[in-house]
Image (cartoon, rainbow, N blue to C red; front, side, top):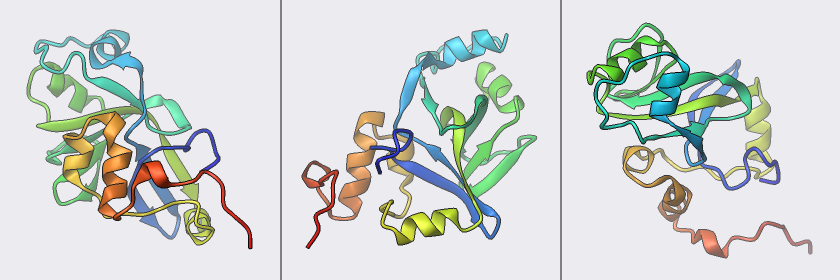
Length: 170
């Protein structure tokens, strides 16, 4: 993908319907930790277990808004159930629970999201702008950010290092 927002990214599509699609870039940490985000939001972090967890660039839309991709889904004020065990929450109550040490077992926090209008993602897929692979919970939550794209490509049987950035013409 030539677009600088999405070049060399792994994007987890959370919702895709006839009105469009929403995804979170999961392999582009920004220069901010969870502790710094909590300070910015005036939230207390009682448990420091996750204080150094990175915050991610989730996409170019609403970069001032937080999105928490997490497992298990739990019962938060504003959660989109993505899969049986994965949710995407935008309400502050999940962060407050994390600060108390009562948050979800696995999570990834991003600022912003990737969004597509109706038919846009389908068009991009038809143009081979994206490679698609079945989502893997272990890649999302257990694989280091810098290894996630390569791990996803391996699920397709591809070696990321061998892909070219340009297409040839016959």
